[in-house]
Image 1 (cartoon, rainbow, N blue to C red):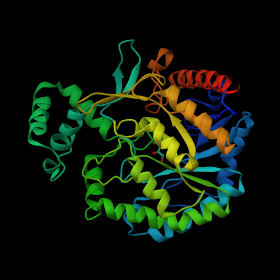
Image 2: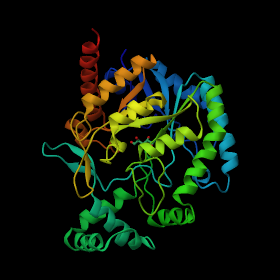
Image 3: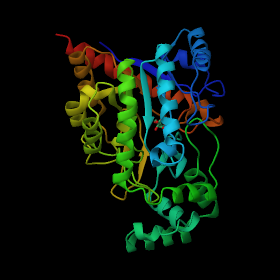
Image 4: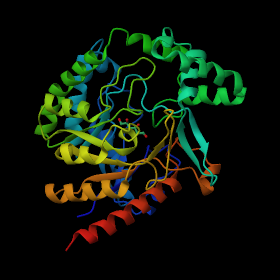
Amino acid sequence: MLMHETMRWFGPHDIVNLRDIRQSGCAGVVTALHHIPVGDVWTVEEIQLRQSMIEAEGMTWTVVESLPVSDDIKKGRGNYLLHIENYKISLENLAACGIKVITYNFMPVLDWLRTNISYTLPNGAKALYFERLAFVAFDLYMLKRPGAEKDYELPEIAAAIDWMATRSEEEKEQVFNNALLGLPGSMGRFTPEEVLAALDSYKGISTGKLKENLIYFLREVVPVAEKLHLKMAIHPDDPPYAVLGLPRVVSSEQDIADIIQAVPSPANGLCYCTGSLGVRADNDLVGIIKRLGQHIHFLHLRNTKRDANGNFFEADHLGGDADMFTIVRELLLLMRQRNVSLPVRPDHGHQMLDDLNKTTYPGYSAIGRLKGLAELRGLQMGISRSLVD
Ligand code: DNO
């Protein structure tokens, strides 16, 4: 049994269109209704409209990524009760349209964070990059987050001062712009004022409180999902540790185990993202499949290369720190044991060839993802054939 191959499509505004996606050879599309404000209901009409576009190109919409969880829900304040009720209605509507997997995350304010979205690799292709010192310099001296210096050791602050003194204005501006990039599916940027206000609104929300709010949310929505035969798949934090003084609760195997144990249900599961989890050397990627595999509902396969200073860049899908051979082998064994074909997508890709002249959503140019998917497909095929004896 092979994985169900998908590619992400951001919708009608994505310059990578459905025809391009179909040529990658995948059968499924992962998308979201990015135009609906977070917290509002996804109506059957809107879902079907998107679905019909995908089906007209001969593919199916299998996985939602993401049905976003509002900051009010994450904070347990404001309109959170209304948003949870709306979330349940959206789940009902998605199930009525035949969707099976719902991806979401519980990262406060920002989704993923990088300091450079066009880091040039030795071969001229471009990758997403997180440079630790650039990020510290951004936090302390560009965003000027009140109290930020409490989060860093003195030598790191000194190194960030040095970073500011030695880098060009252009480079600083780039870091500033990249760190303020909006959410996936949008080309927008936050203003520093917006980010500072959003950070301030999380005052008083400790890690424990955020976890409590996640569990509250899950206790509400997981029974609904279970009844509808939907699978909820939480996406890990990216990067998998606290940033900008915000708490993070989906960064390690222990976090994921806690989340699953708090609301036991086949519907309460994980989007297994090797790129996000793999940034932490103490995350045992193969062990997570072995121990929590029953709860893995969606796969993001991507690779990162980290160094001792806390920097990482997005490597080739089969390169980097994650041992993709062993991971894919373990996943194929898991699928065989569970008798399911898990949906997978090549997460991110290098900007390369003709795509170097195009503006796409960061990480989501077509050719690099296609290369990643093709490599993963070959790896999968080889392992799968060798497993059949
Ligand atoms: C980045 C993605 C994430 C993911 C969300 C899921 O490219 O993997 O943004 O879609 O975190 O909610």
